[in-house]
Structures are given as C-alpha cells and as structure tokens.
Length: 114
Image (tube, rainbow, N blue to C red):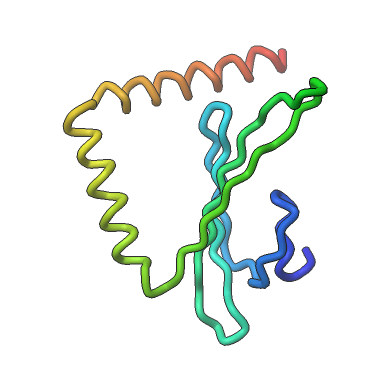
C-alpha cells in the first residue's frame, strides 16, 4: 500500500498505517485506523462509510472522517464511554436490537451464499 494513501476513502492523510479495525454495522461501515507520523507519534482516523444510491441510480459511498490526536485520546475515550453508558442506562433495548439485527444480517448473508 502506498504510504499515506487510504484506498477506502481515496484520501491521503500523510500517515503510515499501523493498525486497522473494520466494523460493519448495517448500511454503515466504520474504519478505525491507527497511523504514525514521521516522528513516530500515533493518531487515529475514524471513517464512516455509507452506501447510498446516487441520482443516476449508481451506488456511491458517502464518507465522513475525523482525526483524533494523541493528546485527545483519553478525553475522547471518556466522552464516548460516558455517552454510550448513558444510552445503555436509558435505552438498553437499543443494544439488544443491534445485536439481533447483526445476527439476522449474518444469517441472510450465509443463506444468500447457498
């Protein structure tokens, strides 16, 4: 892979790939990419990719990306944990529904291959 070029997004963000995690969630896919700067510092890019139908009927991918820098890792993680904890406390059924939907989607994919 060419250094700094993200084939999923077509973007060059200048960092060397260190680690990647892909999370598929229904119509969305999330990419968590740890990158290294030339000086060896790490930063994280989080990319949301959504499959959509364009005006001409062709499938397109809409992408949104955030960059998270090392000095913000702890605060970001705390904020995310707090927000998810709030939702789990007030709407626990959202997490049950998500697990059920993922399971059903996996089964549909498996049967489609048969």
